[in-house]
Image (cartoon, rainbow, N blue to C red; front, side, top):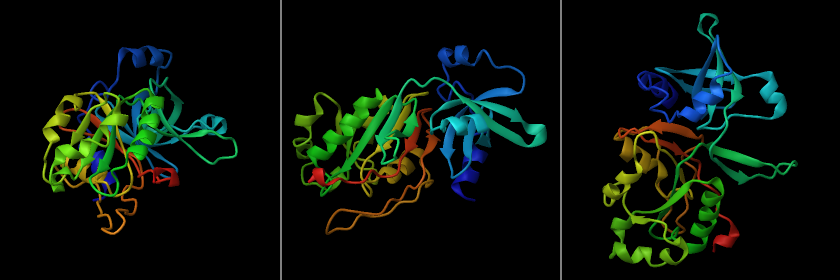
Length: 271
């Protein structure tokens, strides 16, 4: 069973309210009736989207009108689905208003930004003790988080390997400007209890950070099952390949929703 099969099998009992649906989305959806149902995008594959709906999930394409407009749903988007199960067809026909949009610049000729995720409440900026712990890189991630409108939280993974984990925060606190900085370890569980106040039901969290810092390991730890592939970083330069290749929304036992994200490339200005 691959992770997409697992997604469809394990989400049959979730309601839209558990997935972050609010009265604002109810009002936005009121103009639709008949074969239209609301949903939330859980994963984008190459040409189709996995969508959570009330009590289940479907795989859907998008309408020609959305494609012509260049409006492609992002993970976390609440959408309008033309749902025709008797015909074996589901099509995304509209994207409901977004309360926050998490983007990064692309090199496209139109100069538009690439949407990474939508309707995010909290951004976990994941770094790691060792080569990746870099204040200037954290500042770059913080600017991305602030631009999205979501609340950033800085996690220093692999902190249990340091002689004094508390010292790891010294370099980061000057750029954090009052933002929580949490030393932790996704493998040993050190410090994870400090994440609990952020992992509340219906809260949507996105993880960002360089490749190999342990984002997928953290997802696995919080889900208490190995759903994401992991890799190790090289000792000599602290780098690793991108383990996560697609963005995907997971539902935690606490009811929080978490989006893993392919590692952002390190720029030369990080040094």
